[in-house]
Length: 140
Image (cartoon, rainbow, N blue to C red):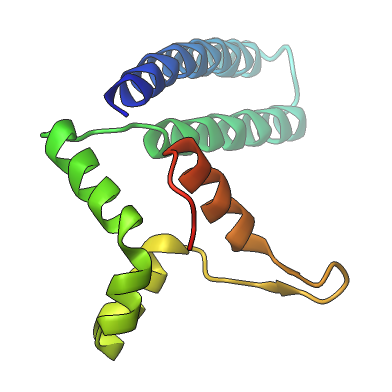
């Protein structure tokens, strides 16, 4: 599991570098558009339209960059606790209070569970199954 964590960290670092490079390119484009506007090479409406689009793209990339960071002060302990919870979900659910069950639901399904009538399936259940398979834990 630690190998998977370290692989994910390296992957995130590579992704972050790529996103930071894209942000740098966009910032250069924004500066270029600002200079062209300042020197009268482009009209205000063109400047505002292009600058707004580029700033929105930069903000989107910065949001993705912020969400993609994995920061654990003690990854071994955190992963160990996560594996313990994941391998004991059924027992925790069966013996838990309503508050514990609510917490478990939020932990396992942070976006909630949505039923898809067309496919007669629950969307987030597949995510859980893939995660447990990755951990080599079978749902009971």
